[in-house]
Figure 1 (tube, one colour):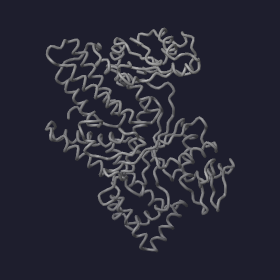
Figure 2 (cartoon, rainbow, N blue to C red):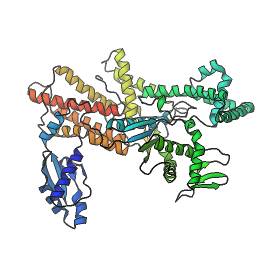
Figure 3 (cartoon, one colour):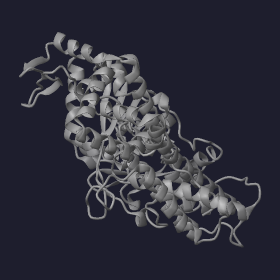
Figure 4 (cartoon, rainbow, N blue to C red):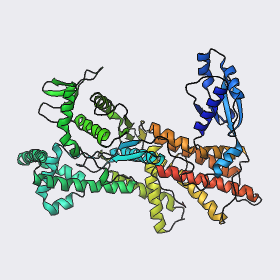
Amino acid sequence: MKIKSQLNRIIKKALESANIEASDVIVSDATKAEFGDYQFNGAMKLARTLRRNPREIALDIIKHIDSPIVAKVEVAGAGFINIWLDDEWLSNSLNSIIDDKRVGVGFIENPKRVVVDYSGPNMAKQMHVGHLRSSIIGDTLATLLEFLGDEVIRQNHIGDWGTQFGMLIAYLEEQGEEGASKNLQDLEQFYKDAKVRFDQSEEFANKAREYVVKIQQGDPHCLNLWQKFIDTSLSHCEEVYRKLGVKLTKDDVRAESFYNPQLPKVIKTLEEKGLLVDSSGAKCVFLDNSDTPVIVQKGDGGYLYATTDLAGLEFRAKELKANRVCYVVDARQGEHFKQVFKIAKLASMVGEGVALEHIAFGTMMDKSGKPFKTRDGGTVKLIDLLDEAVVRAKETIKKRNSHSENELEKVSSAIGIGAVKYADLSISRESNYLFSWDKMLSFDGNTALYMQYAYARIQSIFKKYNRKLDGKIVIKDSLEHKLALMILKFEDTLIKASIDATPHTITAYLYDLVTLFMKFYEQNPILKDGVEEDIKKSRLLLAKLTSNVIKKGLEILGIEVVDKI
Protein backbone atom coordinates (compact mmCIF):
# COMPACT_ATOMS: atom_id res chain seq x y z
CA MET A 1 0.00 0.00 0.00
CA LYS A 2 1.70 3.20 -1.22
CA ILE A 3 0.30 5.43 1.53
CA LYS A 4 2.81 8.23 1.03
CA SER A 5 2.02 8.46 -2.69
CA GLN A 6 -1.67 8.79 -1.91
CA LEU A 7 -1.05 11.47 0.71
CA ASN A 8 1.28 13.33 -1.65
CA ARG A 9 -1.54 13.45 -4.21
CA ILE A 10 -4.02 14.67 -1.59
CA ILE A 11 -1.66 17.49 -0.52
CA LYS A 12 -0.94 18.33 -4.17
CA LYS A 13 -4.67 18.62 -4.89
CA ALA A 14 -5.15 20.80 -1.80
CA LEU A 15 -2.34 23.09 -2.96
CA GLU A 16 -3.95 23.44 -6.38
CA SER A 17 -7.31 24.24 -4.79
CA ALA A 18 -5.59 26.89 -2.68
CA ASN A 19 -3.94 28.30 -5.84
CA ILE A 20 -0.46 27.49 -4.53
CA GLU A 21 2.14 26.17 -6.98
CA ALA A 22 4.58 23.54 -5.69
CA SER A 23 7.17 21.67 -7.74
CA ASP A 24 7.27 18.68 -5.40
CA VAL A 25 5.23 17.41 -2.48
CA ILE A 26 6.80 15.04 0.04
CA VAL A 27 4.92 13.68 3.04
CA SER A 28 7.11 12.05 5.72
CA ASP A 29 6.53 9.74 8.68
CA ALA A 30 5.65 11.59 11.88
CA THR A 31 8.51 11.51 14.37
CA LYS A 32 6.23 11.24 17.43
CA ALA A 33 2.74 9.83 18.01
CA GLU A 34 1.38 13.22 19.08
CA PHE A 35 2.34 14.57 15.64
CA GLY A 36 -0.08 12.20 13.91
CA ASP A 37 0.74 9.39 11.48
CA TYR A 38 2.42 11.56 8.84
CA GLN A 39 3.66 15.12 8.47
CA PHE A 40 3.93 17.65 5.65
CA ASN A 41 6.70 20.18 6.22
CA GLY A 42 6.52 21.89 2.83
CA ALA A 43 4.88 25.09 4.05
CA MET A 44 8.26 26.32 5.30
CA LYS A 45 9.83 25.87 1.87
CA LEU A 46 6.85 27.47 0.16
CA ALA A 47 7.03 30.45 2.54
CA ARG A 48 10.42 31.45 1.13
CA THR A 49 9.09 31.32 -2.43
CA LEU A 50 5.73 32.98 -1.76
CA ARG A 51 7.07 35.39 0.88
CA ARG A 52 4.23 34.49 3.19
CA ASN A 53 3.98 33.25 6.76
CA PRO A 54 4.40 29.41 6.67
CA ARG A 55 1.67 28.86 9.25
CA GLU A 56 -0.80 30.85 7.14
CA ILE A 57 0.12 28.73 4.12
CA ALA A 58 -0.39 25.52 6.12
CA LEU A 59 -3.80 26.75 7.34
CA ASP A 60 -4.75 27.47 3.72
CA ILE A 61 -3.73 23.97 2.66
CA ILE A 62 -5.70 22.07 5.31
CA LYS A 63 -8.92 23.91 4.36
CA HIS A 64 -8.80 22.01 1.07
CA ILE A 65 -7.90 18.54 2.37
CA ASP A 66 -10.92 16.31 1.90
CA SER A 67 -10.33 12.57 1.60
CA PRO A 68 -11.70 9.36 3.15
CA ILE A 69 -8.10 8.41 3.92
CA VAL A 70 -7.64 11.30 6.34
CA ALA A 71 -9.41 11.44 9.71
CA LYS A 72 -7.86 14.64 11.01
CA VAL A 73 -5.33 17.31 10.08
CA GLU A 74 -3.93 20.10 12.19
CA VAL A 75 -1.29 22.78 11.90
CA ALA A 76 1.43 22.74 14.53
CA GLY A 77 4.38 25.00 15.29
CA ALA A 78 5.61 27.26 12.55
CA GLY A 79 3.66 25.46 9.84
CA PHE A 80 3.85 21.68 10.17
CA ILE A 81 0.75 19.83 8.96
CA ASN A 82 0.06 16.75 11.07
CA ILE A 83 -2.06 14.04 9.45
CA TRP A 84 -4.01 11.22 11.10
CA LEU A 85 -5.38 8.39 8.95
CA ASP A 86 -8.96 7.21 9.17
CA ASP A 87 -9.60 3.97 11.13
CA GLU A 88 -12.31 2.78 8.73
CA TRP A 89 -10.03 3.32 5.76
CA LEU A 90 -7.23 1.43 7.53
CA SER A 91 -9.63 -1.43 8.34
CA ASN A 92 -10.88 -1.68 4.74
CA SER A 93 -7.34 -1.55 3.39
CA LEU A 94 -6.27 -4.42 5.65
CA ASN A 95 -9.35 -6.48 4.86
CA SER A 96 -8.58 -6.18 1.15
CA ILE A 97 -5.15 -7.85 1.56
CA ILE A 98 -5.87 -10.59 4.11
CA ASP A 99 -5.45 -13.34 1.48
CA ASP A 100 -2.98 -11.48 -0.72
CA LYS A 101 0.29 -13.41 -1.14
CA ARG A 102 2.09 -10.11 -1.74
CA VAL A 103 0.64 -8.61 1.46
CA GLY A 104 -0.61 -5.51 -0.35
CA VAL A 105 2.68 -4.78 -2.12
CA GLY A 106 2.16 -3.87 -5.77
CA PHE A 107 4.62 -3.78 -8.65
CA ILE A 108 6.57 -0.63 -9.45
CA GLU A 109 5.26 1.51 -12.31
CA ASN A 110 8.48 1.76 -14.32
CA PRO A 111 10.41 -1.51 -13.98
CA LYS A 112 14.06 -1.56 -15.01
CA ARG A 113 16.50 -4.18 -16.18
CA VAL A 114 19.01 -4.33 -13.34
CA VAL A 115 22.35 -6.13 -13.23
CA VAL A 116 23.45 -6.99 -9.69
CA ASP A 117 27.11 -8.02 -9.47
CA TYR A 118 27.87 -9.76 -6.17
CA SER A 119 29.79 -12.45 -4.28
CA GLY A 120 32.83 -12.46 -6.61
CA PRO A 121 34.96 -15.28 -5.17
CA ASN A 122 38.51 -16.01 -6.32
CA MET A 123 38.63 -19.49 -7.87
CA ALA A 124 42.15 -19.99 -6.53
CA LYS A 125 40.83 -20.28 -2.97
CA GLN A 126 37.79 -21.37 -1.00
CA MET A 127 35.22 -18.74 -0.08
CA HIS A 128 36.00 -17.01 3.22
CA VAL A 129 34.22 -14.54 5.50
CA GLY A 130 35.31 -11.70 3.23
CA HIS A 131 32.76 -12.96 0.68
CA LEU A 132 29.90 -13.12 3.19
CA ARG A 133 28.68 -9.53 3.07
CA SER A 134 28.77 -9.23 -0.72
CA SER A 135 26.89 -12.52 -1.11
CA ILE A 136 24.19 -11.68 1.46
CA ILE A 137 23.64 -8.02 0.58
CA GLY A 138 23.74 -8.69 -3.16
CA ASP A 139 21.28 -11.57 -3.02
CA THR A 140 18.87 -9.57 -0.85
CA LEU A 141 18.99 -6.62 -3.23
CA ALA A 142 18.40 -8.87 -6.24
CA THR A 143 15.46 -10.62 -4.54
CA LEU A 144 13.94 -7.31 -3.44
CA LEU A 145 14.15 -5.77 -6.91
CA GLU A 146 12.64 -8.91 -8.47
CA PHE A 147 9.77 -8.86 -5.97
CA LEU A 148 8.97 -5.24 -6.83
CA GLY A 149 8.92 -6.01 -10.56
CA ASP A 150 12.38 -5.21 -11.95
CA GLU A 151 14.01 -7.65 -14.35
CA VAL A 152 17.11 -8.70 -12.45
CA ILE A 153 20.21 -10.27 -13.99
CA ARG A 154 22.48 -11.74 -11.33
CA GLN A 155 26.18 -11.70 -12.17
CA ASN A 156 28.96 -13.44 -10.26
CA HIS A 157 32.26 -11.90 -11.43
CA ILE A 158 34.63 -14.68 -10.41
CA GLY A 159 38.41 -14.39 -10.47
CA ASP A 160 39.59 -17.21 -12.75
CA TRP A 161 42.42 -15.59 -14.73
CA GLY A 162 45.95 -14.43 -14.01
CA THR A 163 49.40 -15.62 -13.02
CA GLN A 164 48.36 -17.69 -9.99
CA PHE A 165 46.47 -20.17 -12.20
CA GLY A 166 49.65 -21.21 -14.01
CA MET A 167 51.02 -22.29 -10.64
CA LEU A 168 47.81 -24.08 -9.66
CA ILE A 169 47.34 -26.10 -12.84
CA ALA A 170 51.03 -27.06 -12.89
CA TYR A 171 50.59 -28.42 -9.35
CA LEU A 172 47.30 -30.08 -10.35
CA GLU A 173 49.08 -31.89 -13.17
CA GLU A 174 51.91 -32.91 -10.86
CA GLN A 175 49.48 -34.45 -8.35
CA GLY A 176 47.89 -36.73 -10.92
CA GLU A 177 44.17 -37.41 -11.17
CA GLU A 178 43.82 -39.40 -7.93
CA GLY A 179 45.97 -37.08 -5.81
CA ALA A 180 44.37 -33.95 -7.24
CA SER A 181 40.86 -35.25 -6.55
CA LYS A 182 41.76 -35.78 -2.88
CA ASN A 183 43.77 -32.59 -2.37
CA LEU A 184 41.29 -30.27 -4.08
CA GLN A 185 38.79 -30.98 -1.30
CA ASP A 186 40.63 -28.26 0.62
CA LEU A 187 41.40 -25.51 -1.88
CA GLU A 188 43.09 -23.34 0.73
CA GLN A 189 45.62 -26.05 1.54
CA PHE A 190 46.03 -26.90 -2.15
CA TYR A 191 46.96 -23.27 -2.86
CA LYS A 192 49.44 -23.19 0.04
CA ASP A 193 51.09 -26.44 -1.10
CA ALA A 194 51.34 -25.17 -4.68
CA LYS A 195 52.91 -21.92 -3.44
CA VAL A 196 55.50 -23.85 -1.42
CA ARG A 197 56.36 -25.83 -4.56
CA PHE A 198 56.60 -22.60 -6.57
CA ASP A 199 58.93 -20.96 -4.03
CA GLN A 200 61.17 -24.00 -3.55
CA SER A 201 61.55 -25.29 -7.11
CA GLU A 202 62.87 -23.08 -9.90
CA GLU A 203 61.93 -25.78 -12.43
CA PHE A 204 58.34 -25.84 -11.16
CA ALA A 205 58.16 -22.03 -11.09
CA ASN A 206 59.32 -21.81 -14.72
CA LYS A 207 56.75 -24.41 -15.73
CA ALA A 208 54.03 -22.44 -13.92
CA ARG A 209 55.01 -19.25 -15.76
CA GLU A 210 55.04 -21.16 -19.03
CA TYR A 211 51.54 -22.48 -18.30
CA VAL A 212 50.24 -18.93 -17.73
CA VAL A 213 51.25 -18.04 -21.28
CA LYS A 214 49.82 -21.28 -22.63
CA ILE A 215 46.46 -20.63 -20.95
CA GLN A 216 46.36 -17.18 -22.52
CA GLN A 217 47.26 -18.65 -25.92
CA GLY A 218 44.51 -21.28 -25.67
CA ASP A 219 46.66 -24.41 -25.30
CA PRO A 220 44.16 -27.35 -25.12
CA HIS A 221 46.04 -29.31 -22.44
CA CYS A 222 46.48 -26.31 -20.13
CA LEU A 223 42.92 -25.13 -20.70
CA ASN A 224 41.65 -28.61 -19.83
CA LEU A 225 43.58 -28.55 -16.52
CA TRP A 226 42.42 -24.98 -15.88
CA GLN A 227 38.76 -25.90 -16.50
CA LYS A 228 39.01 -28.90 -14.18
CA PHE A 229 40.34 -26.67 -11.42
CA ILE A 230 37.65 -23.99 -12.01
CA ASP A 231 34.86 -26.59 -11.98
CA THR A 232 36.08 -27.98 -8.66
CA SER A 233 36.40 -24.52 -7.15
CA LEU A 234 32.93 -23.54 -8.35
CA SER A 235 31.46 -26.66 -6.74
CA HIS A 236 32.86 -25.42 -3.39
CA CYS A 237 31.10 -22.08 -3.98
CA GLU A 238 27.83 -23.78 -4.88
CA GLU A 239 27.90 -25.70 -1.60
CA VAL A 240 28.28 -22.40 0.28
CA TYR A 241 25.45 -20.80 -1.72
CA ARG A 242 23.15 -23.75 -0.93
CA LYS A 243 23.85 -23.51 2.81
CA LEU A 244 23.52 -19.74 2.76
CA GLY A 245 20.33 -19.78 0.69
CA VAL A 246 21.90 -17.52 -1.95
CA LYS A 247 20.32 -17.88 -5.40
CA LEU A 248 23.50 -17.67 -7.51
CA THR A 249 23.99 -20.51 -10.00
CA LYS A 250 26.56 -21.49 -12.65
CA ASP A 251 24.48 -19.63 -15.21
CA ASP A 252 25.14 -16.38 -13.32
CA VAL A 253 28.91 -16.74 -13.48
CA ARG A 254 30.61 -14.12 -15.63
CA ALA A 255 34.30 -14.76 -15.10
CA GLU A 256 37.32 -12.58 -15.76
CA SER A 257 38.25 -15.00 -18.55
CA PHE A 258 34.97 -14.17 -20.33
CA TYR A 259 36.09 -10.57 -20.79
CA ASN A 260 39.68 -11.36 -21.75
CA PRO A 261 39.05 -11.32 -25.54
CA GLN A 262 37.37 -7.91 -25.20
CA LEU A 263 40.30 -6.13 -23.53
CA PRO A 264 42.11 -5.05 -26.73
CA LYS A 265 38.82 -3.50 -27.88
CA VAL A 266 38.63 -1.49 -24.62
CA ILE A 267 42.08 -0.03 -25.33
CA LYS A 268 41.09 0.76 -28.93
CA THR A 269 37.89 2.52 -27.79
CA LEU A 270 39.78 4.64 -25.27
CA GLU A 271 42.33 5.56 -27.94
CA GLU A 272 39.61 6.55 -30.42
CA LYS A 273 37.97 8.74 -27.77
CA GLY A 274 41.27 10.50 -27.13
CA LEU A 275 41.38 9.42 -23.50
CA LEU A 276 44.64 7.45 -23.47
CA VAL A 277 47.97 8.90 -22.41
CA ASP A 278 51.28 7.04 -22.64
CA SER A 279 53.09 7.20 -19.29
CA SER A 280 56.44 5.39 -18.98
CA GLY A 281 55.25 2.80 -21.50
CA ALA A 282 51.91 2.19 -19.76
CA LYS A 283 48.60 3.30 -21.25
CA CYS A 284 46.65 5.45 -18.80
CA VAL A 285 43.58 7.64 -18.46
CA PHE A 286 43.95 10.88 -16.50
CA LEU A 287 40.70 12.12 -14.97
CA ASP A 288 39.96 15.68 -13.91
CA ASN A 289 40.98 16.63 -10.37
CA SER A 290 43.28 13.62 -10.04
CA ASP A 291 47.04 13.45 -10.39
CA THR A 292 46.99 9.66 -10.24
CA PRO A 293 46.29 7.98 -13.60
CA VAL A 294 44.05 4.97 -14.14
CA ILE A 295 46.34 2.41 -15.78
CA VAL A 296 44.51 0.21 -18.31
CA GLN A 297 47.50 -1.50 -19.92
CA LYS A 298 50.95 -2.05 -18.45
CA GLY A 299 54.17 -1.48 -20.34
CA ASP A 300 54.53 -5.25 -20.91
CA GLY A 301 51.08 -5.40 -22.51
CA GLY A 302 49.27 -6.83 -19.49
CA TYR A 303 45.83 -5.61 -18.48
CA LEU A 304 44.50 -4.58 -15.08
CA TYR A 305 41.27 -4.82 -13.09
CA ALA A 306 40.14 -1.47 -14.47
CA THR A 307 40.36 -2.81 -18.03
CA THR A 308 38.29 -5.89 -17.20
CA ASP A 309 35.72 -3.80 -15.35
CA LEU A 310 35.38 -1.45 -18.33
CA ALA A 311 34.78 -4.45 -20.59
CA GLY A 312 32.20 -5.72 -18.09
CA LEU A 313 30.40 -2.37 -17.96
CA GLU A 314 30.18 -2.17 -21.74
CA PHE A 315 28.86 -5.75 -21.93
CA ARG A 316 26.21 -5.09 -19.29
CA ALA A 317 25.07 -1.81 -20.84
CA LYS A 318 25.12 -2.84 -24.51
CA GLU A 319 24.62 -6.61 -24.52
CA LEU A 320 22.50 -7.12 -21.42
CA LYS A 321 20.70 -3.77 -22.00
CA ALA A 322 20.80 -2.86 -18.31
CA ASN A 323 19.23 0.39 -17.06
CA ARG A 324 20.88 0.05 -13.67
CA VAL A 325 24.11 -1.74 -12.74
CA CYS A 326 24.86 -2.41 -9.07
CA TYR A 327 28.28 -3.56 -7.88
CA VAL A 328 28.06 -5.01 -4.37
CA VAL A 329 31.71 -4.66 -3.42
CA ASP A 330 33.80 -3.71 -0.36
CA ALA A 331 33.79 0.03 0.42
CA ARG A 332 37.57 0.12 0.05
CA GLN A 333 37.07 -0.18 -3.72
CA GLY A 334 35.14 3.10 -3.81
CA GLU A 335 37.74 5.16 -5.65
CA HIS A 336 38.30 2.39 -8.20
CA PHE A 337 34.61 2.25 -9.14
CA LYS A 338 34.26 6.03 -9.20
CA GLN A 339 37.06 6.17 -11.76
CA VAL A 340 35.87 3.23 -13.84
CA PHE A 341 32.28 4.53 -13.96
CA LYS A 342 33.49 7.95 -15.12
CA ILE A 343 35.74 6.50 -17.84
CA ALA A 344 32.92 4.24 -19.09
CA LYS A 345 30.63 7.26 -19.50
CA LEU A 346 33.34 9.46 -21.09
CA ALA A 347 34.15 6.70 -23.59
CA SER A 348 30.44 6.10 -24.36
CA MET A 349 30.81 2.48 -23.32
CA VAL A 350 27.78 3.11 -21.13
CA GLY A 351 24.94 5.46 -22.03
CA GLU A 352 24.17 8.50 -19.91
CA GLY A 353 20.80 7.02 -18.94
CA VAL A 354 22.32 3.93 -17.31
CA ALA A 355 22.66 4.21 -13.53
CA LEU A 356 25.99 2.87 -12.25
CA GLU A 357 26.12 2.22 -8.51
CA HIS A 358 28.78 0.97 -6.14
CA ILE A 359 26.82 -0.71 -3.34
CA ALA A 360 29.60 -0.36 -0.81
CA PHE A 361 29.82 -2.25 2.48
CA GLY A 362 32.09 -2.21 5.53
CA THR A 363 34.13 -4.94 7.19
CA MET A 364 33.06 -7.71 9.56
CA MET A 365 35.10 -7.33 12.77
CA ASP A 366 35.74 -9.53 15.79
CA LYS A 367 35.04 -8.47 19.39
CA SER A 368 38.34 -6.62 19.59
CA GLY A 369 37.41 -4.50 16.58
CA LYS A 370 39.87 -6.18 14.23
CA PRO A 371 39.03 -7.94 10.92
CA PHE A 372 37.47 -11.36 11.62
CA LYS A 373 40.14 -14.10 11.65
CA THR A 374 40.72 -17.58 13.05
CA ARG A 375 42.48 -17.83 16.43
CA ASP A 376 45.81 -18.39 14.69
CA GLY A 377 45.27 -15.33 12.50
CA GLY A 378 44.18 -17.24 9.38
CA THR A 379 41.22 -16.64 7.09
CA VAL A 380 37.91 -18.08 8.30
CA LYS A 381 36.38 -20.36 5.68
CA LEU A 382 32.78 -19.38 5.03
CA ILE A 383 31.55 -22.99 5.01
CA ASP A 384 33.03 -23.51 8.51
CA LEU A 385 31.35 -20.35 9.82
CA LEU A 386 27.95 -21.48 8.51
CA ASP A 387 28.35 -24.97 9.97
CA GLU A 388 29.25 -23.46 13.34
CA ALA A 389 26.16 -21.22 13.16
CA VAL A 390 23.90 -24.26 12.79
CA VAL A 391 25.61 -26.07 15.69
CA ARG A 392 25.26 -23.03 17.97
CA ALA A 393 21.62 -22.57 16.95
CA LYS A 394 20.92 -26.18 17.89
CA GLU A 395 22.45 -25.64 21.32
CA THR A 396 20.32 -22.51 21.77
CA ILE A 397 16.96 -24.14 21.03
CA LYS A 398 17.30 -27.78 22.06
CA LYS A 399 17.02 -26.76 25.73
CA ARG A 400 13.40 -25.88 24.98
CA ASN A 401 12.60 -29.57 24.30
CA SER A 402 9.96 -28.71 21.71
CA HIS A 403 11.34 -30.53 18.65
CA SER A 404 11.94 -34.08 17.46
CA GLU A 405 15.46 -34.85 16.21
CA ASN A 406 14.43 -34.38 12.57
CA GLU A 407 12.68 -31.10 13.36
CA LEU A 408 15.68 -29.92 15.34
CA GLU A 409 18.00 -30.30 12.33
CA LYS A 410 15.72 -28.29 10.05
CA VAL A 411 14.93 -25.59 12.61
CA SER A 412 18.60 -25.25 13.64
CA SER A 413 19.57 -24.63 10.03
CA ALA A 414 16.86 -21.99 9.56
CA ILE A 415 17.82 -20.24 12.80
CA GLY A 416 21.60 -20.53 12.46
CA ILE A 417 21.86 -19.37 8.85
CA GLY A 418 19.16 -16.78 9.47
CA ALA A 419 21.09 -15.40 12.43
CA VAL A 420 24.25 -14.88 10.37
CA LYS A 421 22.39 -13.22 7.51
CA TYR A 422 20.19 -10.99 9.65
CA ALA A 423 23.11 -9.79 11.78
CA ASP A 424 24.78 -8.59 8.60
CA LEU A 425 21.68 -7.06 7.01
CA SER A 426 20.46 -5.30 10.15
CA ILE A 427 23.25 -2.74 10.23
CA SER A 428 23.87 0.03 7.71
CA ARG A 429 25.81 -1.72 4.97
CA GLU A 430 28.55 0.93 4.82
CA SER A 431 29.35 0.44 8.52
CA ASN A 432 31.80 -2.05 9.95
CA TYR A 433 30.14 -4.40 12.42
CA LEU A 434 31.18 -6.61 15.29
CA PHE A 435 30.49 -10.31 14.82
CA SER A 436 28.96 -11.76 18.00
CA TRP A 437 27.40 -15.22 18.31
CA ASP A 438 25.68 -14.29 21.59
CA LYS A 439 24.03 -11.22 20.10
CA MET A 440 22.89 -12.80 16.84
CA LEU A 441 21.39 -15.87 18.54
CA SER A 442 19.49 -13.88 21.14
CA PHE A 443 15.71 -14.06 21.54
CA ASP A 444 15.77 -10.34 22.40
CA GLY A 445 16.63 -7.35 20.26
CA ASN A 446 16.83 -6.86 16.53
CA THR A 447 17.77 -10.44 15.60
CA ALA A 448 16.46 -13.05 13.17
CA LEU A 449 15.55 -15.26 16.13
CA TYR A 450 13.34 -12.50 17.58
CA MET A 451 11.50 -12.31 14.24
CA GLN A 452 11.26 -16.08 13.86
CA TYR A 453 10.01 -16.44 17.43
CA ALA A 454 7.30 -13.82 16.86
CA TYR A 455 6.16 -15.64 13.71
CA ALA A 456 6.10 -18.99 15.53
CA ARG A 457 4.19 -17.43 18.42
CA ILE A 458 1.46 -16.23 16.06
CA GLN A 459 1.23 -19.71 14.51
CA SER A 460 0.70 -21.15 18.00
CA ILE A 461 -2.25 -18.76 18.49
CA PHE A 462 -3.94 -20.18 15.39
CA LYS A 463 -3.28 -23.75 16.51
CA LYS A 464 -5.07 -22.98 19.76
CA TYR A 465 -7.96 -21.30 17.95
CA ASN A 466 -8.23 -24.30 15.60
CA ARG A 467 -11.30 -23.03 13.72
CA LYS A 468 -12.00 -21.50 10.34
CA LEU A 469 -11.15 -17.83 10.50
CA ASP A 470 -13.65 -15.46 8.94
CA GLY A 471 -14.96 -12.04 9.87
CA LYS A 472 -13.16 -8.76 9.24
CA ILE A 473 -10.73 -6.35 10.84
CA VAL A 474 -12.25 -3.42 12.72
CA ILE A 475 -9.82 -0.95 14.29
CA LYS A 476 -10.97 -0.22 17.84
CA ASP A 477 -8.11 1.48 19.68
CA SER A 478 -4.88 3.41 19.21
CA LEU A 479 -2.65 0.31 19.46
CA GLU A 480 -4.60 -1.47 16.75
CA HIS A 481 -4.43 1.74 14.69
CA LYS A 482 -0.62 1.78 15.01
CA LEU A 483 -0.31 -1.91 14.10
CA ALA A 484 -2.61 -1.51 11.09
CA LEU A 485 -0.62 1.48 9.88
CA MET A 486 2.66 -0.37 10.37
CA ILE A 487 1.44 -3.32 8.28
CA LEU A 488 0.39 -0.96 5.48
CA LYS A 489 3.79 0.76 5.50
CA PHE A 490 5.44 -2.41 4.22
CA GLU A 491 5.32 -1.39 0.55
CA ASP A 492 6.76 2.08 1.14
CA THR A 493 9.53 0.46 3.18
CA LEU A 494 10.47 -1.96 0.40
CA ILE A 495 10.46 0.78 -2.22
CA LYS A 496 12.79 2.95 -0.12
CA ALA A 497 15.11 -0.02 0.48
CA SER A 498 15.23 -0.78 -3.26
CA ILE A 499 16.04 2.80 -4.26
CA ASP A 500 18.73 3.26 -1.59
CA ALA A 501 19.96 -0.37 -1.71
CA THR A 502 19.68 -0.54 2.08
CA PRO A 503 18.53 -3.92 3.47
CA HIS A 504 18.71 -2.50 7.01
CA THR A 505 15.66 -0.38 6.10
CA ILE A 506 13.71 -3.67 5.94
CA THR A 507 15.16 -5.14 9.14
CA ALA A 508 14.46 -1.92 11.06
CA TYR A 509 10.86 -2.04 9.84
CA LEU A 510 10.46 -5.71 10.83
CA TYR A 511 11.87 -5.00 14.29
CA ASP A 512 9.39 -2.12 14.77
CA LEU A 513 6.54 -4.28 13.48
CA VAL A 514 7.33 -7.22 15.78
CA THR A 515 7.92 -4.98 18.80
CA LEU A 516 4.57 -3.29 18.19
CA PHE A 517 2.82 -6.64 17.72
CA MET A 518 4.23 -7.97 21.02
CA LYS A 519 2.84 -4.88 22.76
CA PHE A 520 -0.51 -5.35 21.01
CA TYR A 521 -0.56 -9.04 21.98
CA GLU A 522 0.05 -8.24 25.65
CA GLN A 523 -2.52 -5.42 25.92
CA ASN A 524 -5.21 -6.70 23.56
CA PRO A 525 -6.14 -10.26 24.57
CA ILE A 526 -7.02 -12.48 21.62
CA LEU A 527 -8.16 -15.89 22.87
CA LYS A 528 -8.91 -14.89 26.44
CA ASP A 529 -12.34 -15.85 27.83
CA GLY A 530 -14.77 -12.99 27.69
CA VAL A 531 -13.44 -11.42 24.49
CA GLU A 532 -16.33 -10.88 22.05
CA GLU A 533 -16.18 -13.12 18.97
CA ASP A 534 -16.08 -10.24 16.46
CA ILE A 535 -13.23 -8.57 18.36
CA LYS A 536 -11.43 -11.92 18.69
CA LYS A 537 -11.65 -12.51 14.92
CA SER A 538 -10.54 -8.97 14.15
CA ARG A 539 -7.46 -9.38 16.35
CA LEU A 540 -6.74 -12.81 14.90
CA LEU A 541 -6.79 -11.33 11.41
CA LEU A 542 -4.45 -8.55 12.53
CA ALA A 543 -2.13 -11.26 13.87
CA LYS A 544 -2.42 -13.19 10.62
CA LEU A 545 -1.46 -10.16 8.54
CA THR A 546 1.43 -9.41 10.88
CA SER A 547 2.79 -12.95 10.45
CA ASN A 548 2.34 -12.70 6.66
CA VAL A 549 4.42 -9.53 6.58
CA ILE A 550 7.10 -11.04 8.84
CA LYS A 551 7.30 -14.08 6.57
CA LYS A 552 7.45 -12.04 3.36
CA GLY A 553 10.00 -9.62 4.81
CA LEU A 554 12.28 -12.43 5.97
CA GLU A 555 11.80 -14.21 2.64
CA ILE A 556 13.10 -11.12 0.81
CA LEU A 557 16.10 -11.16 3.18
CA GLY A 558 16.64 -14.84 2.33
CA ILE A 559 15.68 -16.07 5.81
CA GLU A 560 13.30 -18.94 6.59
CA VAL A 561 10.51 -18.87 9.15
CA VAL A 562 9.65 -21.80 11.42
CA ASP A 563 6.27 -22.71 12.90
CA LYS A 564 7.67 -23.73 16.26
CA ILE A 565 10.69 -22.74 18.35
